[in-house]
Image (cartoon, rainbow, N blue to C red):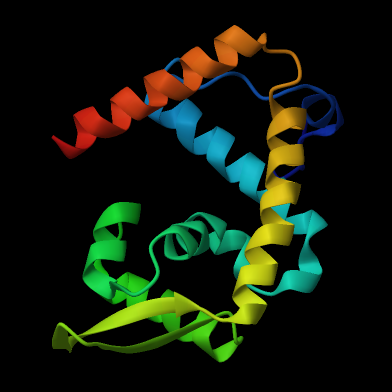
Length: 159
């Protein structure tokens, strides 16, 4: 092979990548699963703007209308400044609205609009179907245990 020759990569391209040292890391696996799951979910729902990406947040707003932004940020594990950027976009898209909270005029509460409520209902159905597809090879009892364990992990991280 000449010094400046480009190596033949055809063989390497046809093989899978070797596993990384983090392959058995729970955090790495959770993040990879989250990236793959949301990418697949969002690719199927391109006509809903930013709403699919923030379905968890929107579901929380639906269940807790009028809650202050800082309380929502804490619930979804975001910095308040990051949440404000997301809320700005969703408000611009007509999905939610913000306004003064009668008990605390300094705080802004968050509510879904009619369009937002419709989007959450539609997207929640798609999310359930997507969950079913992701867990199709996992027994129902194991699914429940997995969800319980993830809940425990979330509690441990927040403690």
